Length: 302
Figure 1 (cartoon, rainbow, N blue to C red):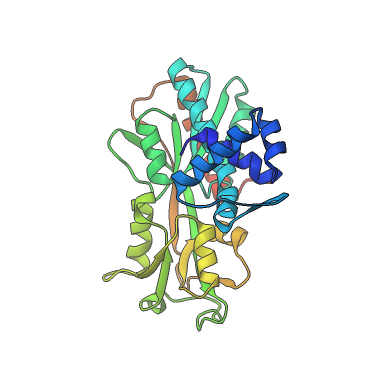
Figure 2 (spheres, rainbow, N blue to C red):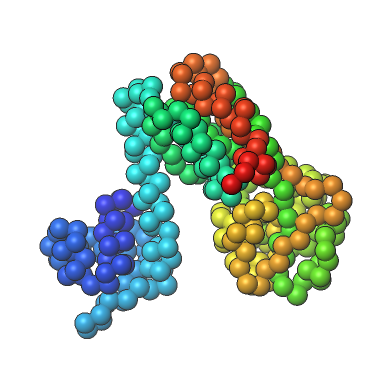
């Protein structure tokens, strides 16, 4: 899917008028119409309903309109990072966040570093643990936040803290009335989880602690916490998610419950390339070593 066509789609989805969208983009209206048709052919989905005097989004178009701006932002951030890598600029720190980074205050940690070291330019993008590590290893980024403390060859990892996990349940579920849930009570329950390849160490840690032996009764996989929670709201199953992100995104129809007894926690870390001796990476690692735990664990004042 070509990014140029995706940008055209975003403008048209906002304007819902081919003439105005074409004028904003700076191309002829027939050219915009042709590019949208090519995009629909690529996706094998009709994105717009074209009627006399009106343009409306289809269900597929509405889905793409929700996701496309975020994808464009990430692609632009990635392009900036690649350009910085090509320049070899020692004054640029390229960072990859995990999707739960905002809820873990990792952005605030980075902003505090920026305040302490204003001479450095920060470029950031957001992904998931396994992708972040790939970006680190192929030198697209200089440092990456990860969950589960996966340590591939050639990568150093600093543990910054840990996040509490909770059980997300449909309203009306037999366990929803409990103040806390026992791990053993989840053994035969249908489960919605994210695909393992997005973060194998994180995924395996959850499965080993909650569903040892046979593993979860997996009925559905969704790549994002939002989609997992939406599925739970329909009664498909339950899930185990990081507490702060689940609380932030929790929709109607879903309740969150802690684990009974010892809290279930998953570590969060900072990864960088082994032997990276650039000043900016060294100072960022040192800063996270001194201050990271306070931000991730919520000990740092607002």
